[in-house]
Image (cartoon, rainbow, N blue to C red; front, side, top):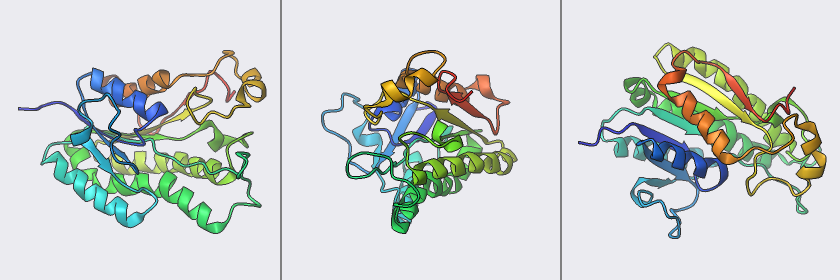
Length: 245
């Protein structure tokens, strides 16, 4: 009988998400990954094909469909963690910051659907399984949610601020069911989406004098989902080397 703890993770294909898959898998968890792409054939993670679900988080209908399939895949087992890591951050054609003046309404709507609405939709649909597992929800916000950022656009930044506020509301509402809801706010992490200009523009702002790495973020996510964090609810942990101070 497979009695492993189960994690549902969005945005698992690279960076923080990929590191999170490895961290939980190494601790013996079953990880069900979700992304808008199918499972890559060149990925070395052998459990991936049967535990990967293609969901377009920008489509409310597809989120509903995907949530129903996730419930089917659980086969009545409890869910122990939901990590809402997926996010979109649109840029100008030249890769520069997309500000309030230039972001069209349909792009605001897409960003908020992926970054804010999809997390609460999944939490609502998976609530019963999370309650049964005494589960934990972790929302991945951003340092950009609390300040104007040099590279993150306005739609992304405000959506992450909204996700931080949503975490507080969820902690109150889901907490009554024994489901803890917390957030992590990464700063500049060495991933593929880090701006090429970050080293000169942002590194001097970080007291620790270096960028973070995806494994450090994944360790924080794991902590929030572990028994060591049983009384943490409604927290937002800054993982940024002190950049926010």
